[in-house]
Length: 137
Image 1 (cartoon, rainbow, N blue to C red):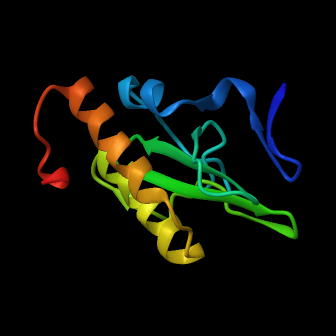
Image 2: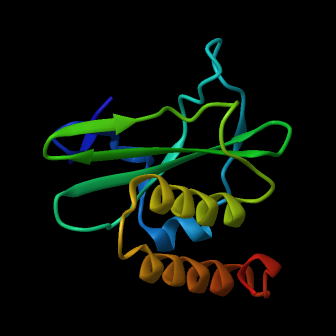
Image 3: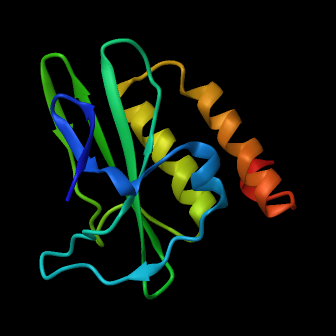
């Protein structure tokens, strides 16, 4: 499987990495995690944070309808990654999971500049779903 290089220390499958616009328009297919509780077919969105960081947000949907997230963050000095696990980051909708993941990355790593990306995400989800979501009020 060909991998897309997001950062020298982060590799994810090339066909599983999407722009925010494509991600907002997709319907994530429900799957089951493997025997370790990790979703191996998660989708990823590149998150532009700031110089010196590379970041991707991973997301998968369980057959029970819950959305699960993970983060992949790397700097020039190291990498902190976490697979999309059935036990982490459980949300009720794709929109909640995406914004929740961004907020989690922002809090955990004290990354500046995500507010613009969150605003773009809200616009894209709103355009695609043609309704005001209470999450974004």
